[in-house]
Image (cartoon, rainbow, N blue to C red; front, side):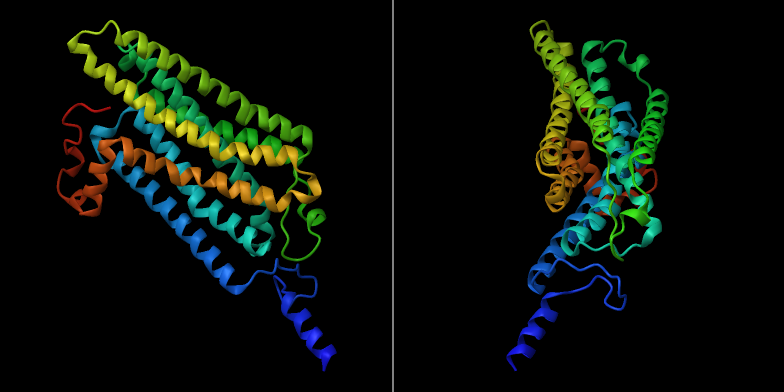
Length: 331
């Protein structure tokens, strides 16, 4: 009887990703209540990320008054963030809870490319947003002619194309064959050689973040200097530009705070013991995609107004795209 009890306990604690397949991987055992709580949390954050970024996308796409270079870059960033909430968060969340891959070999090969492209494009958008704000503050008179919507759309296409090409090069060189990396059925791992990881770290994190931070230091220095030589006619516009720069600056800071722990874990922890921790850190990094629209809601009055129009269905009214959202010429 005692042996049977021990066997039952053993069978209870060992769970398989695919119970009907002999070569199935073993799940990370967690109490049912804990799994339910984690699934509810991950589903809720994923839904919130998609919903909030969709509000940003609809707002900027629909209302003509928001068709500015800065907002088009914010729109591109919101698209990347929505894709993170729609695909990356749920997939990474399931891997984190069960340590199982339920999505097949084909998606296992595609997912790393999708993940890297979206993350790289997000940072690329932040770089160009920083450049846009720098030009607006440093050369406000020529800004409308130097930075137009058409030019901005061109650079957005460049951002996404460059992200795809760079990530394709990195992952083609660094990702091992799926069959070789699979130790059991229900496993999906992709490993990047250390030298390629360093290359990716430099070109998609250190380099862009250095550019962003240096530009924002210049922006705040120029804004402070200009504030001392303003007359009443230009003071209001300068304040609005400064507010916009500060808002995007907060977006950048949140990005850094959410992604730095991931890189620290990847560098410091031993390779054989870092997979679980890195998955946790990467999912935390994904929370950045949920934070951006919350920041917009806190600092951009136009976003609060458009959300109200969308949720009350005023957006369906005739000529709603021409609503005046910025009565005070807010940026």
